[in-house]
Image 1: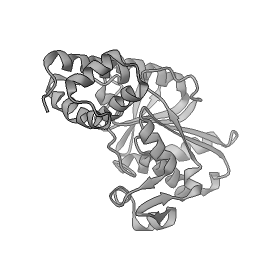
Image 2 (image 1 turned 30 degrees about the vertical axis):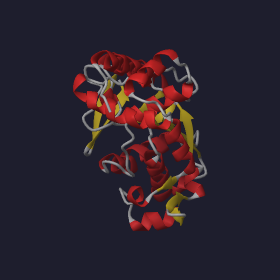
Image 3 (image 1 turned 45 degrees about the vertical axis):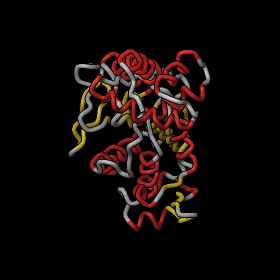
Image 4 (image 1 turned 135 degrees about the horizontal axis):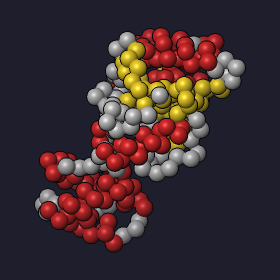
Length: 273
């Protein structure tokens, strides 16, 4: 298939930036070519050139959504980078539980949650380590720009490869059941997680104040202006004594000085100054 020419690539670059905030540099041109191949097959489009023309002239939301979902990265795993979850179990959640005993409620947001391993990891952790708060109002919001990923979160089904990335056999047997070659998470865990379609470029006025926000391996895809805009809105949704967790190599330094890093064992969390 003939790759995008320079003009077509620049259009796709701008389209992706406007829709998702993701910056595709020139050296990632191949990525657009390869991921759009799936889109043109689904929509029976003859070439990448025709796809660009359709996007310019066609306002079909389904085509735009497919392009967005094809370009966004969905890499994730259960208890990814285990150290943050150890800090969550040993430091962060015990502190938040102590501070919220009067309200008996916790709000946790996993932004750009992909297929749901992160929010379900948090729910499992709470069940395992803090059974005394299971009668609290615990709201774990799993959000993503991809409707396909949110559908997967709601389904709570994982294949053999996914289930074996980060979970012990004991946890699998305790919280999942095999059904038609997939592992389905149990109802107790599933009901703790709710889904919400959120584009991080938009406003999130429906999101309640959060005790804990996971925004991991997300900011790396955005330019400085988009990062500043996202962190500005995070401040609006993070409680004064709440915690923000970014991915490895991500930082608020030189982006938003309203946050300060707090090193907890081997993980860096952020709080409002």
